[in-house]
Amino acid sequence: MMVKDIFSIECEECQCYNFSPIKCKSCWEKDIKKQATADLIKMIDDEIYKIKDIIIMCEGNLERQLAFIEIKQRLEELKQMLVGKQ
Image (tube, rainbow, N blue to C red):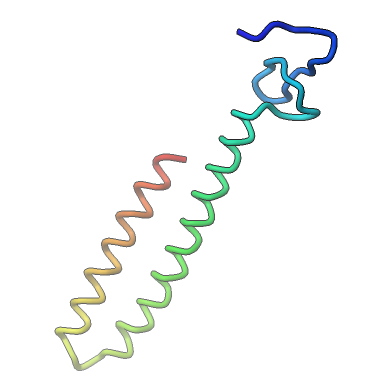
């Protein structure tokens, strides 16, 4: 537990006392991790969308379609894991 002194400021999120004008270090780190996870989920969504187009373009080549379908499924599983961590 942090001791309040005359120079410390209350964190907006966790109400601890620190020397930062807005948030303590741990709250900043949590926000950065949340944003990084959100960015990663967006990138995975973009790749899934591209793979859907590739699957359509591979029409007639079942082996390639199945390979891309498997990649898409793995990306969707990864996305679900990340969504669960948020």
